[in-house]
Length: 67
Image (cartoon, rainbow, N blue to C red; front, top):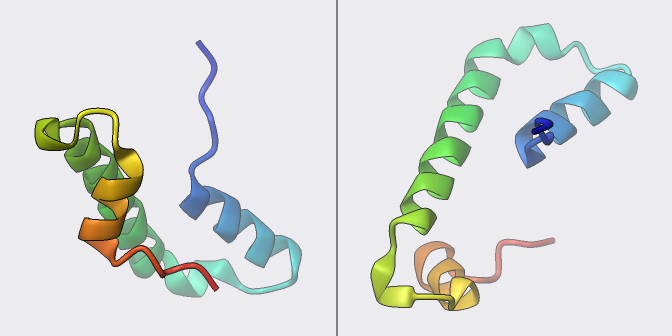
């Protein structure tokens, strides 16, 4: 099984490739990765939502977090 890149890792890579010194943000990046992991675990163990991931996302994060 191959590992996939998380959205946080993708963003860090994009910033690095754009010339941002990502080493200045290591604590924040680590915190974002930990938060992302917790979000995935919470979503996985949200039995009241069943297969309704959109409902879970909307109720947990407000649903309008995309720019």
